[in-house]
Image (cartoon, rainbow, N blue to C red; front, side, top):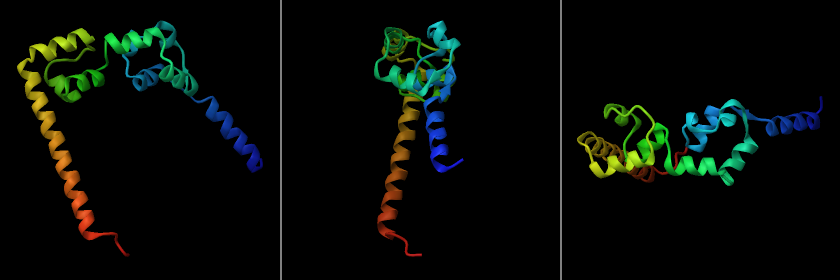
Length: 143
């Protein structure tokens, strides 16, 4: 097999790359169990995923708008970590309405987890700035 043949093989493998519905749902930021049955039953090609991201069908727009949302999306919308959700007793997907209710009611666990998350972000920023300053002081290494 010459290099042209192997290049053709690589190209054909790239065009047929597929993923499980769970992986595609994760990349789309939606809760798999709320997607249509045909989405859950099949495989999704890279091209199909790109098309869903570029031109989402109504079911995908509806899920993104109203949920139910998977835990990573719920955590992001609430400003907490996924672990913080679990500590707060939130283990199931939530709808946009349920998330908005939590943001309005501000239960004690949510306030605590939001404060914890804010502190984690501040510390990460502090470390990043410290490392940047150290890098600027030492300059490029000449090994």
